[in-house]
Image (cartoon, rainbow, N blue to C red):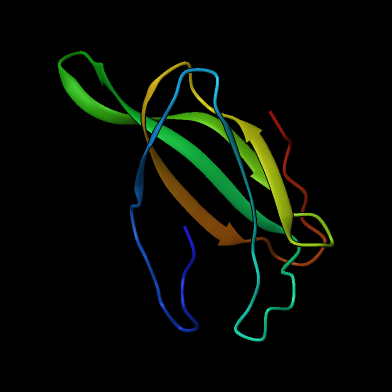
Length: 93
């Protein structure tokens, strides 16, 4: 998915093939890489009859703005992301 400068997308749903990999690069409006952006791959699951979001994987961008995570076995994935505060680190799955 490629977004134009200043374009904002919330709750993007992407269908993946079984065993797929989610990878990409995050840049700003000048195409400079953004490091420390935390991304999550999530899916809907049912618990006690309630539909909830469940994390399937996560990654943070490196100095080149790149990220890579294993996708789910199959199904649709809802993506989410946010920038980490300076000095914060997230655990990769």
